[in-house]
Image (cartoon, rainbow, N blue to C red):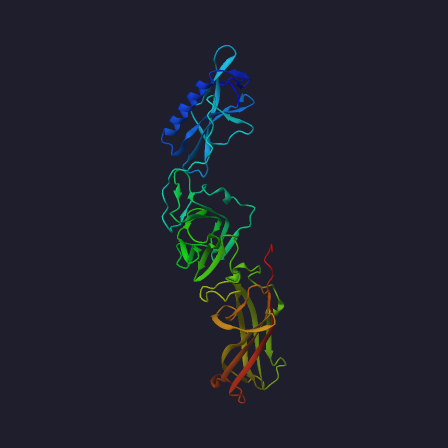
Length: 447
């Protein structure tokens, strides 16, 4: 471009004709070189210098100097300085730059870079970043809050979720890079590796101090443990096929994997109960409590007795004692509480036969999705209602309904010292049948 200093028309700044433009450029060149030399960790080339930004002979308010690549920046940028117009004779002004330079400036749109000596910016604008400390190999570290890459702000993206019995791990984005951190903590990846940065929005599902909780990045047969939590963005130097990188969350021996390429769970049958959209406890149902009786007519010389029962249930993805159910399954813990009177022998009048009785729960069975499942007896809770027998089942994690049945068997021998009926049988055995208890689980609110 033909401008002042090259036989062209004069340059204009804020409507005023400029003079001594060459001198102004010499001064800003010297000031910028001194600024770069004053302990700034940055790369410049032999062709890095200051330029006017000009549009049709009009000089923009900001000069740019560069290109320059600062330690801690991912890209080559420009420094900027504001011009100040100084009177230089009648109707003319010269330019004086401010002494401070502002880094990371963008070139102004619709302008050309110009110097009175016609020197042009270098053809290759990308400069190498200054050397940075090399990170420790295979060692994960956390970025300070506020230093996560721009890609970490993914509020509109669907996060990748892994759950454990203590909470949730939520990944919003990932990024690969060769360097990470700002100017004060810049690191470069060890040779043969890249930095994998994982940005989290939740980390309650991982407890580093627990001996049953662990988290790691897995690439092929290489595992990179994450042993602490100190922020929202963890950086791991990794090698291998990074498209197959996984985030592995472990709790009490069970591994769950999240693909870091698309933030999906690798196997949705693992720990399936944690992701169920069903409520933990069943809906209210009249079938979950009731009573059974012997000899309701109260006839003489027959046995009499009664049973009251109540059925409670709870779905569990994990139990501290029983650990994890099989893939695709949840635990269903049924508690059968019973209270019995008798059986006794009703003789004539007030004569009675009293028995020392033993009560057992037999054939506790679930009907679910057309299949019959036998239960496993658990603990007995000797509560106020008369005691509750736990029965444990493994059921499909997405199955919303089951029907519970059980037999309550009472067996006893006559206590002759407490009996007045002469014709009381020497022993008794009776089975109360509990049938068709409906256990239906509603979808969780909001689903």
